[in-house]
Image 1: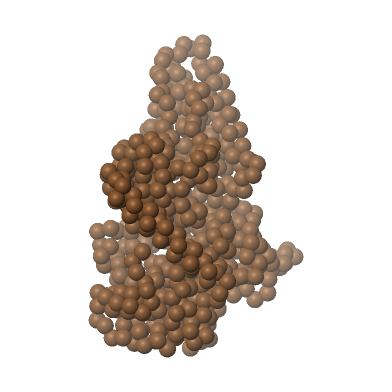
Image 2: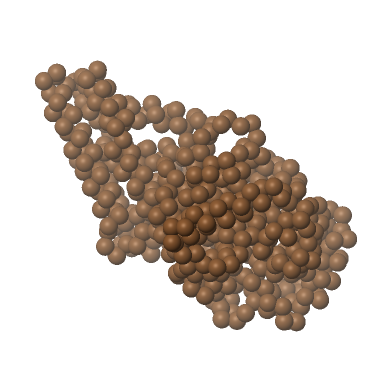
Length: 580
Ligand code: PEP
Ligand code: MG
């Protein structure tokens, strides 16, 4: 038995057999090519590229496979990469210079590029390396007549164990057969984690060496709630996890009974429980968990999956598909939040010394009006297909908000002059995730239809603690009295100006925080769909009065440790919240 600890990326427990997957390419031969044979070698390269393009296009049109926009964008980007004239030129030039076989020239070229990409300081460039390996592996396999294993062909249930999964692996894998994922690399925001959460596949990532220790077909336990993977477990451990898996299932099933009931406190306040989504494909899970709508659609995922900014049509189709799938429910789409920790190939690496405090989100959009215009046109056009709400990220003060609102007006006028219909009265709100915005929320409330607090960033900026830095993670505390005071200011200012206060940061999904947030007065909580049922259970078992009393006590406490201790006690005793 071997127990490994990693990052809990998608909750739940899976027990099954290891399917050890690697997308490694075959050994690459090296041999000399005569001058007369060079043209034939180039021809071989071109036909391998042509075959790769046909395979990729086939993925786009595979019958019965309804690929969503980000996944289509990945495949489109790969098609662009195989057809890139510079890539062709480099290989053909290398071939004529070196007089060795084309597989070797291609392999050497790609290795050199990968080295450069893997040591880049820019995270988006590092991420591009998996796309490059993916595309190069495809062409190499064709040159060598080597058949790549495909996760699309999985025909029995497995636990997928891998060093890494390429974007094309997650796009194409048969998700019904993958019961769990254990992977050496990856973190909570990696592509694999997002796909795993949207399909509710229990997953542990960042395990460092699970793919080295795992044997094909051996038994493995994946505990995606606690970030644990156990290889070849003994009977006692198996029993323990079988019980835990049953309890997890039973709890989920019992919570599903609340599906059609409103999230209403005992004294009748309706709390809107909405879903956060990253890709349109998640809409199914939104419906399955009884969400009251989408509280945060992170539109940047559409951009991160592609080498180029998605055009108006592509964006319009993505937004429209979500709106049409949720016809009676509000869908809040956040405008582009790129930059900082969310890099995409289209955003140049400026070598900023503080990118988290740098040229990102609304700042990026306001200085790239063409990009912003394209997104706003797509959003406004999509508004006639459902109940759209638009939200700006990272607003820090009134000037930015006014500039963004004026630009929306300008784009709307442009569309009207083209005779394109737009829904009347689209609510436009802002994320409150910068402390200055919280402090001037009374001013911002006059120009916003709603607030949504992004605690992931608000905590980071308030406590001056990088949300991605493991070394100082102990300081990242949602229950810090400084954070709680800001939350109170925001909700009070929203209500004083007659607008609703929502929260869409991770804190909204924490059952330990639910009563506190109700007591502070939040009207809406938005989270990953799977978190909704447990939060609904708590909402339905408390009254606003009781929640306000609890907030009164919590606000008197002096440190995050005291607040947390108090909440663990109250939430455990009175509301049955345990560490699941
Ligand atoms: C947040 O900051 O809390 C938030 C919801 O936005 P993101 O996590 O996408 O930065
Ligand atoms: Mg944020």
